[in-house]
Length: 208
Image (cartoon, rainbow, N blue to C red):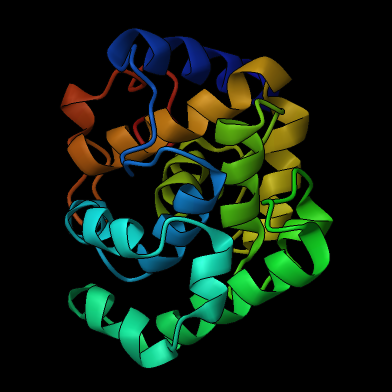
């Protein structure tokens, strides 16, 4: 079985197992998803979802974040961990959005990754979820599950992103990555994967 065939089988199996492929971060617009994703670094999505309502009520747009002090933003996000670094990035990000992009979140990888604290993973999430363009979000679940499937033997997220772009149908790639997160949490655990319960066990390299 080729890697392309494995990838297509994985797309179909995960689509059946997790029909609702949605981001677990709660957001209402591009800026909210951008900031929520930054907060989610080394923090659970559930915790971020508890913090963001009050944060976005106080700072509803890029302009209000740009005018905020890092200390005030930090007070709202303390429970997310690394709050000093995150608050610094959020304020700097908002200032750049206001100065360079009229307060709007860009719709392309290059501009998004020019923002403080924003890497390719977050940029692809925005591209896919907000702007509806084909995107591959390579997080820890994506890296682990696709490596076990035999689609690559890498750890470099950017290289994996481009490999998966070649293997996945463009219209399926974004939802596929969301489903990998759900599957990684529920079944394909880092330490003790439940291979006997896996919807991909018949073609997963780890199980064969």
